[in-house]
Length: 476
Image (cartoon, one colour):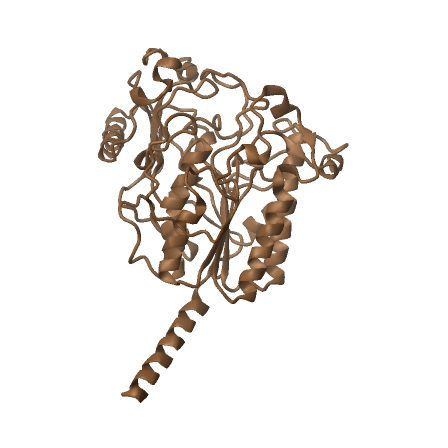
């Protein structure tokens, strides 16, 4: 009996050690307000011009070319906090009842997050969150061993005044990029020394306003020709600082020999600023936006507001590969669980699906409980389209619905990435089908209604305000 017990314990220890050794590491780098075309390389190789004509991002370009780029990668929301919830919990902001930063937070914070899922697969996992959190519950509640607490915009130097936000100025540690990255590398080294697998989320405050940069990055751009689209030297310097910090991260990744068992993911919490400085646009068409060829930007469910850089490198991922299958930030939780070895004990009511199959076959589809991507922004916002709206990405089609005015738009975003050709009158049956599908999902999760938003009466005057955005299409 004693011999049998010893044999059992020895076998169990070998099994545990084998599981721990096989458990991969994950590094999630999340930028803030970083646009799809804000790199010096394109996120879609079929659209080589869809990149910055001024910003230089050699280290980000290296990360993208070292693995797979997702040309149809989406943030779950056009603003920051809802997307950050979606990442942690694998659910749409509509289901989570967190669709905006301002106003009442209706989210249930008794949820299971990424670190808890990974630790259930392998208890040896360590987890760290560094930088901007923007969730109304302490990170330790969700299994983060190392973290900065309930940080938001102000910890990154945000001042909600017009001139300080957009005029630009220098600091020694701009947007905290250097200190956050240094602590991230220290956590990586410590985890390797302890021989423990880890999950690290490095959430940059860059490139959210205020525009802050290092003197050296600003000086490096002196005399360099500005682009027709991107021309703000301070903003370009801020992008450059973030790129340099990612270079430091990649250097540590190589020095620690992490390539064989560590995945790095880069994405953004929402699309980039549509123009600089911010404008009280009221939904009017921009003559030209910073996210071209995408339409508009942050605050809107047009492609410029939610299509974001999305790339992943790591073991088994073919360098310089591309998948055109749509993925979204609420896919991250089930994907990491799948890569870690088990999807058996995922939280209930997940909206996300694992995109692990895409990493070896880019043409595969992502299996989700709901077939399609859901976006919900039931608010008036004067710097955006200024009317509540929701959207559904279904295959090649994108449907945007404005419930207050009962108007809709339909686009084939595969062929029309700039959302210039509204197909709703040309394809009324398809528009109605997608409207029914979208409304059915929102009803099934008891999503916040536009009339429940604090902006309904204040900015929307009881729902009577209509976005001027539709002028773009009624002129034709």
